[in-house]
Length: 274
Image (tube, rainbow, N blue to C red):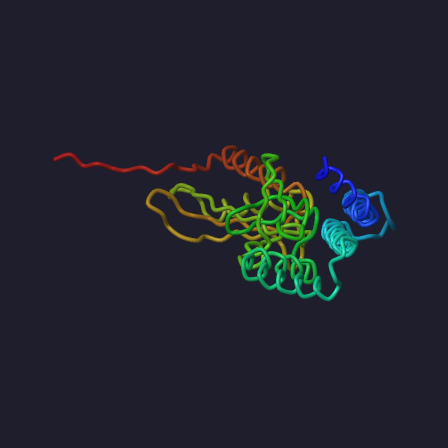
């Protein structure tokens, strides 16, 4: 009984201290939770294309949203620890040491962040562009802090690390409004080559949107194959609806050659039996 009374007396003597500690812990947790909820709300709002000025760059939205989220969370954690009584000087020293350790452990991640900054600064691609890397191709959906999101022609989302996008070859098909169409066609050795060239040029010139003048359509005899004479057709056409435009040109070429009875032979092998 004496031990219980002694315990109660100690608790009564330290009650103000215990209450203060409990209030500080509760307030610190409240600050951390509120900061986390607020950071998520702000990130979601910043990602919304309808939020903010109309001329706000859509390519920058994901990075700005992520950056603001981490800044708010950092401030919340700092306030959380300070409320628990951790000295500010000690926090700065701990954060510095943690930053160094994290930097050494996550050098690849930091490389992705640096590459993302370079992609946003130099702008070799932006949201909506159709690009082709060494391994992936698709429309750019987002340039994030760590990875670039592509959507390929099959509708599948691909997440490519920023360092891989930055360090490898990158073709941006949306950057220019026009592209050169090239197609190599094989015709039979008995074909009238000059007449064939005229037919092919007529098909190219009749295609809507084909450039004229200095960039006019061209046809060249490029070589003699095993079973066909090779002709290269070239012209500049609008870059939009590329697959549809090039498909139509190929159909027109095939129909024009068939109509003129110009053979497009397939590979053949002649065997001599003794």
